[in-house]
Length: 240
Image (tube, rainbow, N blue to C red; front, side):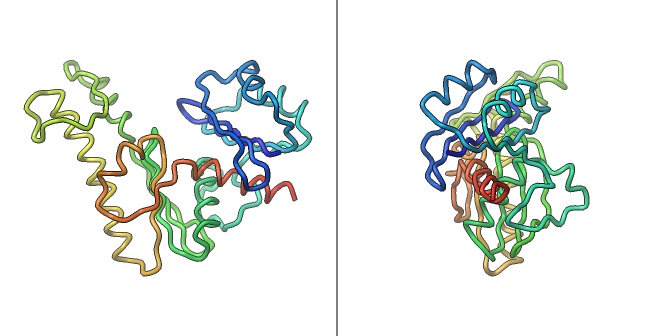
């Protein structure tokens, strides 16, 4: 069985695969040996892959390398199903690499725009069998927190579906400004992408994808687990 560990900025996703079949998936906020052991009870793990946007905690090495026969730490040097055309591949986030792997195998040979609405809002571009690069901007919650942190009087607002626009009060003004700004940003990226490519696919993923998916004007494939699926693909590549 394959163990997939995706350590993000706010939580950690765990998944267990038997080949290409996903047997379980869970999310934990406190990455500890106890939590990992509890989540993996009943599974015989033969191989594991770890993707992290943070510095790996020592427990990963202690728990995984001592108990799992094959463990792969994802990096730009991993064997991948696509070519990276990025001038600083060592700075490319492992979550972006994994999403690109999932997209390249799902839509082989197509031009693909991956919109990942997570802590950061990223736009990554695949063409044929190559990762061409992408753009990064603050995600929804990062924008809300920045308005609160870098001003004296603006409150901290959370994403919500009901608000006045133009805002009739400060909370609605912030919600309308941030949410509408993100939607405009995504739609404009997609519009530009569509105008420049004939055989194209668009993928939406990330923690805020569920909130945003009904607000986007273009056809896309919603794949909240594309990073997890991509990590399993990369693990299979590197365990051969």
